[in-house]
Length: 299
Image (tube, rainbow, N blue to C red; front, side):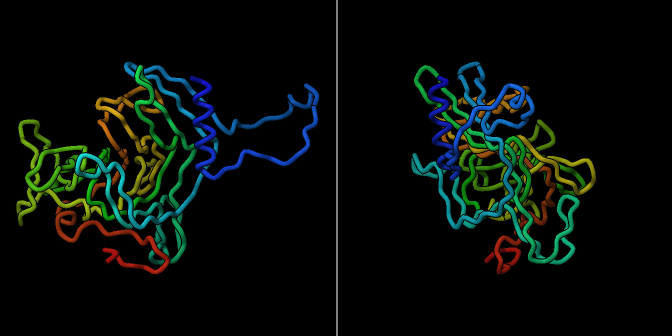
């Protein structure tokens, strides 16, 4: 198992474009000199036992600040559909005007507000049949994610929707009048506060409680910060790929599990609250993600 883990780690290092090769002469140093050296390992490998799977997590000791744009992406194209389909996907954004504040820092127009990611990891899940799945994530992440999403498999934990003075959890739906789902969702709306109520997706007029995912143009990934308007890092951001149903990925602290199904699963924790009338009407504005500002609706 450990040999396999190092093989996967080498592949991951190559894919990340990081060369572990150095051109230098090696010279021995004394025990006393070695004792004065401090540092952090470039890679940490953990073997974690689960109920139905064994996990190997490889964490890289590096931090990244980035702004990335992807024109078009489809992942998990099988069984006549797509697990995740989006265009104009972006991590991070650009200040639209002078004085824009994000997480306690003030930016001028045109300055980059990066997506921050610390200690990226790759985790493998194995069972008696072999590799059952893998996921890519970050020990700490925060920043904006923008997209024109038409199919989403995963969860948006922490997303709230306010309507008529009440705050509801957000719920993903398979379509208009469709069922709640975390696989290939196309709409998002209210999850009932009353357990006796049935969840439903209605997009008609004053009764609208749901909207296409394309109306949710930008979200901020992260947890609630200590001060108002502050975004704290989250350890829950990951993209998983599963061979079978009923995969239980562990939270990084080992305290909880996240049960996911077959295919692709994207976990995007957020602390946002959006207004229902905005969501079902004009939609949530898109942040500026291009040097030439394409506007709050992009198109």
